[in-house]
Image (tube, rainbow, N blue to C red):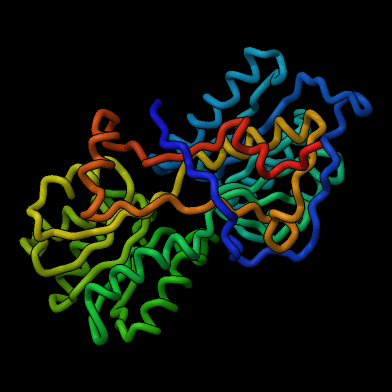
Length: 356
């Protein structure tokens, strides 16, 4: 699978979402009274499987794990990967604890409701990493992009396109989900500051078909809208609804860094403009490389952590009309569901670790 490696630069100065202000433990998981040779076992908790993003995230983690398995450093990768609610994900984490894992990588369904079970894990010497969105548990290492910055990037572009007094609608992910709340909260701030009116919001569940249906309903209800702000996993459906209504020339639509949208964008006239901001599924694989390094005795460089436990990865350059041709030429051979990706290698993550 082709990935675009993230350029390594200074960490962002903001957190993914509000996190606890404490310092994470640098102690490796208990695995033989200090013997850091392995082999280790890593668990993955994913409580939402209804998107291409999560499928690619799991695939990236499995690909990264395979090299360690070949080297004999990783004995097993235990996947708890199923649609579930917060209580179900708490059980996922407990299953991993009971399986005797040395580290857990979790894409959490809540920013705080899993804190207790994460504490249970870290109290037993298990390293815990939260990816894709941050959690408030102070003993967990959050690894990922700043979701608020990610959202603000496309919101600022849209606000500039529709101007002061512009009227827009928003097609969000899942209300109450930590990533959704961080994203839309940041977008709202941008729109308020720019004088852009948000007429209404709708939940598309990060699903293209649902996003298309919701956008069709919004077009029927609000015929005078100037633009649409949406998140990953729905922009293709939203654009398809706008095209079906024959309004792609008058309604500004934010996009996504996914092949299906990029292809449809590429097929539009030169007058059509959009933006796609990368939210890499490969964050999970990056966290796995960090986990393996720490399990083998390396320590994270706490000076690079925001709020004591959050490692913020820099955003890729957004896809715009200026670089669309170049980006599309790189990824057009991938499937429609492919998400533009970036994964830090085992060597790349050394920048975040204490060097002798």
